[in-house]
Length: 103
Figure 1 (cartoon, rainbow, N blue to C red):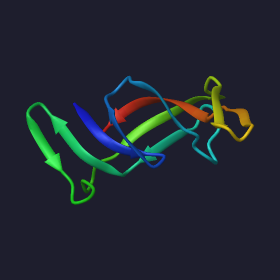
Figure 2: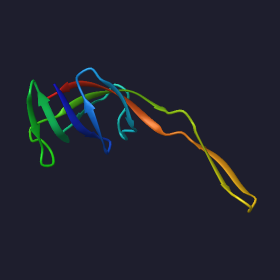
Figure 3: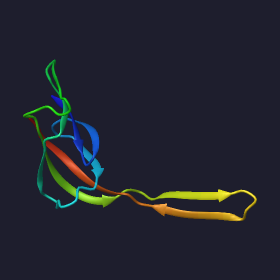
Figure 4: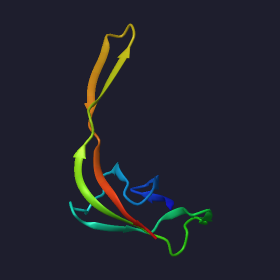
């Protein structure tokens, strides 16, 4: 059984036991259990339910494992013939989650 769920504003294909790094979930702490009811598609042994826009009565349960930051991305800007150069970096926050159930 798998589902396509909207978690933190993005769509993810999830199954029971999957571990994902998603955009940071605000107001959640390590060990919290979260229920996401924004399920777009649910497939179970050949039977597929497609939502308009969401499948009613379906939910994905997940557990927050950790919070962290991804690796640094370096950004370099340059304008030729203008003596303009700029380098900066960015580290995106994430939340590591484990899918415990797809209902």
